Length: 355
Ligand SMILES: *Cc1c(COP(=O)(O)O)cnc(C)c1O
Image (cartoon, helix red, strand yellow):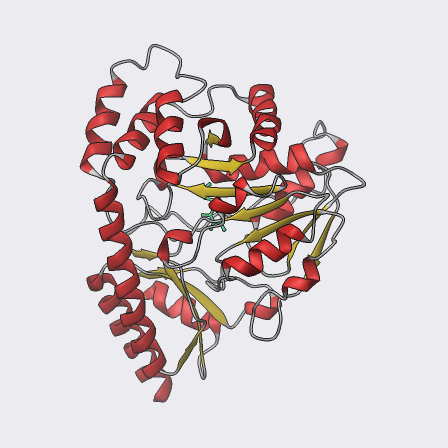
């Protein structure tokens, strides 16, 4: 830290992204990326867009926003495209929270929420998940704060029912409720239709997981026109060209090829059930996931040992050290081949432990 760092950032603890090692070839199951390449249409359109990189991108991302709105069954003014969904989440902290109206989220959830709160000088409260790592919805009623809920939650993989989401929204009439749907395409129900009914609901989604575009950085917010206008104010006060032209073109390609996304999600869900069953046979407790990852703990081997031993065998998973979840690992669901390699590595580790 330099002598010059602003006083207000002296205690900032930045987000720790999952490892992206370049030293050797790992089976990479640690950051919930898609194992499949982006749609060919996305590849073609992005390649075309490269030729016009001398020009600034369209600050409105008009064509992409129109297609996105159509895909989601909402109007143009209900959508804001951003540089990953991390950006729209940051905008939400900037726009809807302040010193009196802080933020509230679960004790075990996306690790970026407290970081966004800190950098925006927003006070926050964490509400513990229950014993089975579920959200107790009434804990969030009349919170007097901006509510952030990942649904399905990460790293647990567990989702709320749409009716439960609605109750949280309904019971916070004077505050914005943000529903982070990064993993919604793998089996949960989206709250997007509720944005027509509730002016205080912001839903965020991303192209990073189900749409195979983590490296392109494309996300979005869906909400009432009023909330979107506030969020746009944040965008035009920080980075008007937040979505670059290659990404925007690739996004249009992805949306013009919905069958490809659907097929990949279906494969991931099948591989998830396959893997969860195998892991259970091998002595793991797996939380019931509706995402592209499995949160699992072994009855004999510690979370950290499992992580380290898997890494030695070229399989990278995500281990968190915070107390309640230190025995678990978050395992991204990949291709069938990747899952079989994971299972072989686990068997090898368990055999050595038996000895
Ligand atoms: C991956 C993820 C995001 C953000 O992803 P982007 O790549 O920034 O779109 C947001 N929320 C949760 C819970 C995530 O897991």
